[in-house]
Image (cartoon, rainbow, N blue to C red; front, top):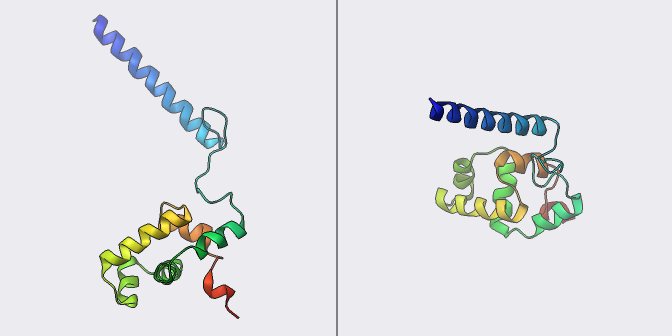
Length: 121
């Protein structure tokens, strides 16, 4: 019985810890009081975003524009006449260079940044 009581206490402790983390995330803070950010690039300036986009290779930039328009990776690969695996490699490079983790984050944070085409007259 003593073992069962110890297990119940341990489970209760972890449930309280989990609940505290959930409450902290709802209030926009984590355990150390720092604000949470759901999008890693939400706090950077438009100039920095523009600079990050300018670091994309020409092919990555073409794929970036298609992804911003809402095309799937498969559709984008077909439009660019490249293999899906190549498009996936380019997409990985785009995500790393722009500091995003998902297509949704890419669209939310970079929808107004067209990059190289926007700079052309």
